[in-house]
Length: 264
Image 1 (cartoon, rainbow, N blue to C red):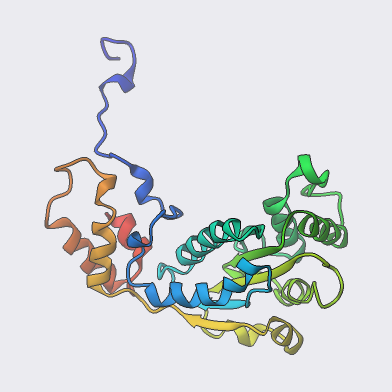
Image 2 (cartoon, rainbow, N blue to C red):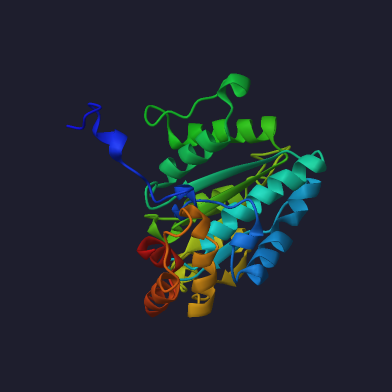
């Protein structure tokens, strides 16, 4: 025990802003997103109709772990929402981790919970006791009541037990008359380049998506990514030799930025 009676009184931290090292940290500026300008432009081009209350294009993003798919998706929809406000277009966003929510029922509950404002809509999305069909009906009501467009990010989409039903239902919601005031855009993210082959013909036809591939980062890009996160540490903490070494190690791991940040 310390003299003060509290073990934590003697601890000092090497960190200035440790949030910069969190894998799910979404930066406010694209300056912290290295080597993905083309991909960001492609995503923005696909989603921009939503700013004017029109249906955005559905997209599927492919690439190995740590290539920036989730980061770019979250960042660009964050900017999309801001741009929508300027045009008086209400845009909602639902991020779903399909590694956790692996079934159609779990996904639509996650979507509904993400976009819902219970105090306004008087709708709820409990984890049990409500059928999948009823969850869909509640989600449609929330979307029509609150938004002009909802963008749904389905991360790790290939981990779903059967993605066909949810992709087809969501992508056809307007066409089938489920929605009357709101459009839906889907961003599907997969580590498997042949994921689309798992989809049946009806799902592929309904989705009618644009495909984008995220290549691995090279050592120079990884070095830039790590350098941009140096403000996470206090001055003088990180030796000049650390970042080149970490970037070289991570480059061997198929250019995995997550691995690089974790090593750092």
